[in-house]
Length: 184
Image (cartoon, rainbow, N blue to C red; front, side, top):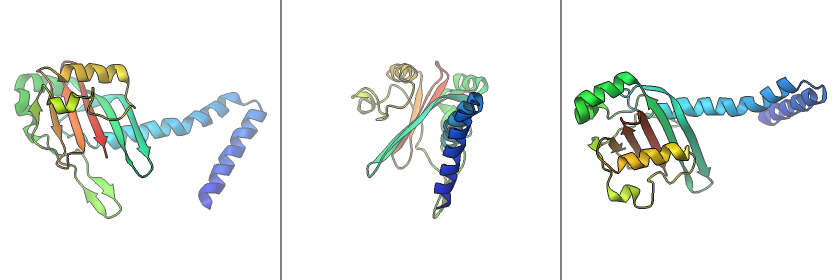
């Protein structure tokens, strides 16, 4: 009941601001929920990247949910220069400790720490790219995602999957991106 009242008050405020010609505030209030949502997505999906992989900023983050069918998400982050230098020097050895998510995920019945299998070097297995992409989600920046997919078909990148096989991480040092994807 309270949420309905809050939404109605928000809508009333938007209408009143438009009526009084306070367009800048009107537009800001209209955009604010979307910006808050995007910031929340950035921090939420950053939790799934192992702490050893330092990220600088989001490149593309999005999710898609379908009632009764589950959903999918793709988050692409720029990797820090320090991490990229470390990967170039150590190769696959860098990823030995990068098997736990950076923060536990809170659930209604407690929390869990996402775990990943051992990292492997690309090229990706054919089953990942036989249909174009392994993401099953059309929410990421398609140009960046296409670059990542092209680079993972050859040597020089790294990938892993979660122990439940529902989350994938791909890191492409030549592009400086790490890509988190989820499908359920």
